[in-house]
Length: 330
Image (cartoon, rainbow, N blue to C red; front, top):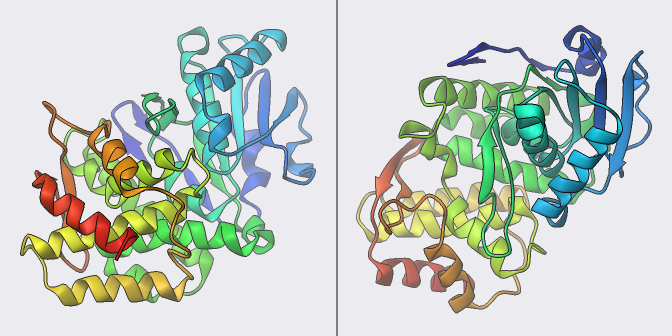
């Protein structure tokens, strides 16, 4: 994947983790989600392991400080490498810690969930949550490599797969409609990774085009925050996409039939599921404080057609409230 500072490989396929040794050239610490089994590919000379609990509640400044203390305890120097092994929360947390430890040390992303493979491990975004906002504290820190070993998808629980499929639907709706017809998960990961790589290469720092990847995330992040991060990220994004599509139709940007098309794609993967236990007012408050606001106004990603999304839309509050109420209350 190309970026301003160079490029790095994104390896997708069964056995990709076996290539890890090629991307470590000094002391290294693998930050591993505690729920994962022992992975023999991590038994490398000079690679130590630290198992931590994943999940959104781990993604806090307190969690980052604990991780930095471990870097210090393991005497991880400027020639060191952090290997983030797990889902999106582990990648975000470990990546953020790597980006600020000694002003930045090398990072290798090893995503083990569908959501992390198709989205969060690629592109260099890292971050932690505050009490009221998702990923409000973070950095752009590109990894040395991304190793998406698709063997681990076979053992994912259905809930994890469903959450990842929400991001897959996002790519189909915004960038590449052909993704919707793919069934083989390895092909899905490759196609989504390629779509994201193209966007990030064109707009690494999210000054314009990259904002398209936030489709569904404005309301999705608000639902997560309003629930105290008890709603799974993928399901929250699915709810957020339902709201964004309805806003698009209400503003006349797309046909109402596109809303139904998206709803059917989501239903095919068991999404979004039961309505989240959140109050409409709390979601609207959290939506208004979204970190992507400019000059106090939200910039929405909305649909023009299948695979055609636009960034930078301002939406009247009444339209937002009506769309969110339609999905959460009606």
